[in-house]
Image (tube, rainbow, N blue to C red; front, side, top):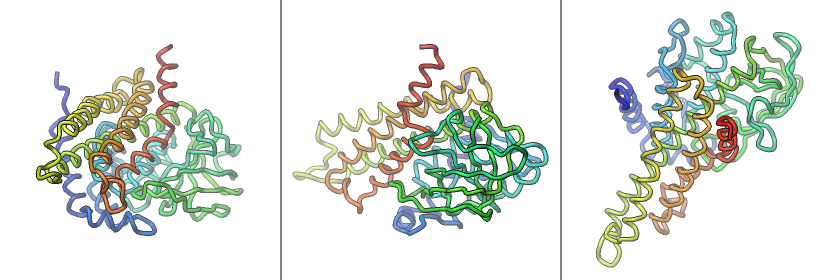
Length: 363
């Protein structure tokens, strides 16, 4: 039995990684990090032209019909490069429409989203750290269309999105056009400047309910999101290990590179040991969503909680390994440190999902 990625998946990672390195090297990433919006539509268009905007969608709608694991290996690569692109929100929004929309809704909405012509994101979070479908409070309209009122927080790339998939009470989900009346989009200054956030408020705003949405389909979208965040966290943590090793080989103190110091050697080794075995967590969680459904919900929760904890710790260790420069705006590690902070809270904290995993296991 082969427990590694397929040749096609490895090629996918390499292709995406090379594209990001060419189109968004560190100098360009720095520009976007400091930019007011932090968004490069040309970069996203290039990724969409590679098929990433609809990689998991049916071929009838312009997708590539790949699996969640393929989505996840892309998320790992984007996380390793701290890519400032709206991949996560768009992937979850299209997953929601594909799973919960009826045939007419899917045929009408998905082609332009799969091509990258339009951008979608999800609006799930509510005040007080509410993320889970059974906790959403905005009342759904009585019919297929209607109006909604309420506020959603931590909406990734909300200022750029054309469509919002909004989580409603009872696990219902609805699509809202950004040009609908009664919608207010307010920029939110989060720590992670590679994935900008917004607060979106709806006041009697027209929406279209996804006909087949319920707690089960909303839970599937949540679990896909947990896996993608876990993959992003793995990619970012692994990148910080590599950056720290390279820094240790070049930074000199007392006439030798700091990599000669035993304490730092131990720290770097522990960082690598801490993250590398965790790769299998997100691999299996992604695989389970398509092939082992009885394990999917629990393994997604485990992957998210463990990998985001590891990312947080390794970002701290990497900052220490870089010494004084690691704590400054001029240092590069802070970009991944702040991305780790956002991964930790997006879709719920590690503690929340550890508790869920324990409950799902019957503990």
